[in-house]
Image (tube, rainbow over the protein chains, first blue to last red):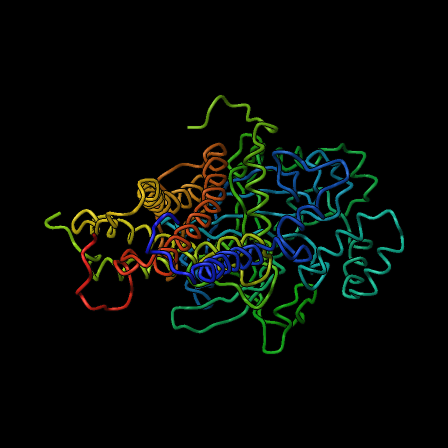
Length: 350
Length: 187
């Protein structure tokens, strides 16, 4: 310092103190950001585990990358009001926007090669309040925790056959899912599958009563089993062609069934189904009226983040919705930045 | 400005320290929440959004107070380069405080996310979904956020430098402690 008379002899000590304060703050910041702890499960590491060897599907969702948009109506029958004060449970009709999809990181996957099918859904209340969800067709999830899901992706991506064995011995809950994947019948249509929340959420009604629930969208169409080989013969994009034709000829319907947990049910573990005798409440009907390709369709811009919830619904002790929200958000950030790799065919959006 | 003040007005000091705590919390929450998939992700992001909107309101109040009350002069003997640095860094700090919440809101709007704050308060979208705008705002929010933290550290270092080494009256002008008002006039 060039301030004679101002700088005291002890200033070196103070300088060290200032450097320590600044350095310590920077170190705390770096730790919080995870830069010093590469072992932390971050959204980036989850996405890295989802990425196939051929590279990420640029411009597409990092998982459930193949899909097709739909729009329609949710017809609430009013029964849900007893469980939740969500506005879309009040008897009436609410616009929906959604996406049928396949649980794969490959947007060009052959339909018959993908075991898990999904539905992204957004229901809007009259005042614009949104409820988003993303459901899949297995009756329970593959693993109990987000960390185990990461381990599953890593093990499944390894050439070494021992990797899966090691994974299964560490995560025995996976056996039930593997059995489902092997034995459950395939259907030949998105319209014949049930889509399940798997994760639990807490419903709060107008009186403030809380219930932990899961829900399913059960098709009105009768599921017809089809052999995987037969489905494969129908073509790589059969499901999208089929649902387009089917909805053009008639709207397709699903009943939304809410299952209410009882004390002691495993609300935090989506790999555990609840007993069959749990109370079920039919809260309304999903009516899919129009199908549009994803490239220019309305579902493209939507992140079906299952933590976008209306008043009257909140997350439970299930650890997955938070993890999914964090990872989906990162996936959205990436695919929006890569939109040029998946160009829209229309000249411009309004 | 009516007359040249010796210290910042009490309301200005209160806002400064309140916002300092909130901004540092925001910066830490910001980098923490985007690097976790744990359940705390959801409360963290809710706090980040709510506090961000609150800070946007507070900075506008603060700017109005600054224009009304003005700021105490820097010591007359401060080297010109440091005076320039002080002025520029304060302009930048105000810039970050205004721009960061706007970018945060913009990136949510441009991604078609509903903006719902603590208590279910909904902020209507002022922008349509846009991949391009989302990417621009997202990158700006991230990199300006890191630059903001660096500037906060510089500001902290400068404050300590004034208080501990230079021992001029600069720190006292913003000190949170009520102090004796008889401050030496700057020489």
